[in-house]
Image 1 (cartoon, rainbow, N blue to C red):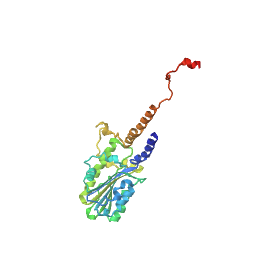
Image 2: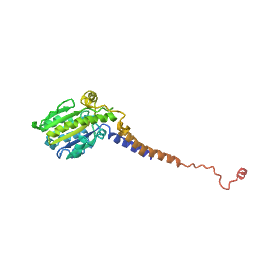
Image 3: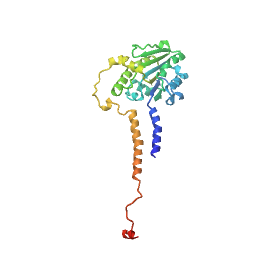
Length: 288
């Protein structure tokens, strides 16, 4: 029994770990119904890596029907970061109200340090005959013009550092989303038929260094926060994916194994007995 439980544990641990390590979310929505987002190769993208999903999406015949394709790269973004967003933020409302949407919380990067969605944006621009525009937080004005035809807009957000956690990481996400909401509102005001792709990517060392110097736009607008404000659940993220996995393993694997072992030891009976059998006479035994 214990051997089978351990075998099951070792079989499930790689699958459970792969659900979180080296994975990043991929979100997409469109203002009109998009056949590209509903294609089987894209919908079943949780079984493939990010590069395969980008290739399937960008090679779809329907992708060029959109007047604007917006590709957002957010290095270091994880599914847990999206859960900290308010339901009233632009991304959450767009996903809930869009005619077509795609939500893949855990997509493997498979060693790709660059975001394939942004890396293939130039190819998409050439294929659709669209105007390519690159935009970051350091660029003051988003240079888009509906009168110049279709656009492929690549937006790069400051990277989220791997060591940043708790209230600091949540504050960074809020600042990034606030700036992103204003830029998306400008695009939506000019283009009625648009597609937005919001994808995370691994945070490389270069991204980590840039995040400390290229986020001056947010640093100037960020207000000082009181570290004592709110309870412990507001300031710290207690239930991390690793802790949840450890609790599940302890409750459903280790404790049953210990219980079965203790029960097996308690059920062992000794064949030896000190009871004197009936009719036994020590004197007669001695005289024999």
